[in-house]
Image 1 (cartoon, rainbow, N blue to C red):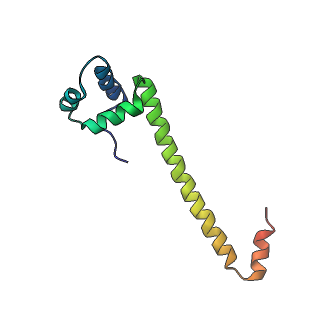
Image 2: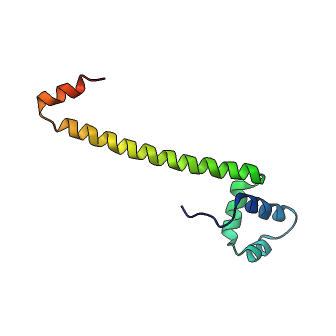
Length: 99
């Protein structure tokens, strides 16, 4: 996923400007972001302060890393099962007996 060029604190500041009366078009022009990106931020982060936003982004990054670790471990497990299944019958039993 592409990293945002705006920090969580900057996003919170931009959203606060909208709450204080600036239009979405003015904000988009000033910060050189698309209106779609602004509305996506607003939908996703509306009502959060900078600290909460940073915490959310950190948790999302940790979640991404954990999902990647799970996917890698799942592939390793699947490969190990396939290897054991393809062993001769006598050697399979020695692997199945171990807990």
